[in-house]
Amino acid sequence: MKLKAAALAVFLLVPGASAQNPAGLSADLKLMPSYGGALLTGRIGASKPDELLGVWSSLGRARLMKCAPRCEVVASVPITGNLVLSGGSGYRVVLGGNFKPGQKVSVVLRFRQGVVLNTAAIVNR
Image 1 (spheres, rainbow, N blue to C red):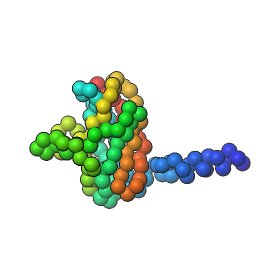
Image 2 (cartoon, rainbow, N blue to C red; image 1 turned 180 degrees about the vertical axis):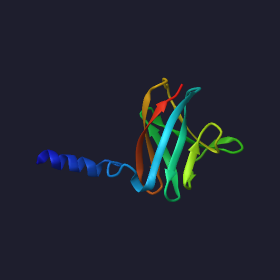
Image 3 (tube, one colour; image 1 turned 180 degrees about the horizontal axis):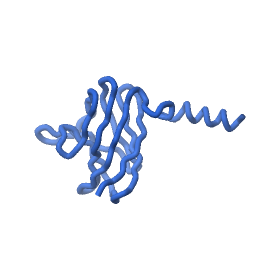
């Protein structure tokens, strides 16, 4: 009985543990190694408009960037429907650090609604 209570407490206290898809958010992400770090690529989906406020990995916080016409660091990235992240998109997320192909990296995304989405990204070659 104590084990069930402890499991329930962990389930209720861990952000993102209450649902596989908290607040209609989803992410399918990969990392592309680049000079001094890696570029987060893929798609972040939201069922209603929101903003991405921060991205963290085990190596630290990522930089959110708006790249139109020139890349500059921003405090948040707007999401309406699907946000596509790539080397050619208007918004980019860049993690600093040393990444190896095939490495699985835990990524935490924080949104304006106060929701935290825990996911993983695999480093591509």
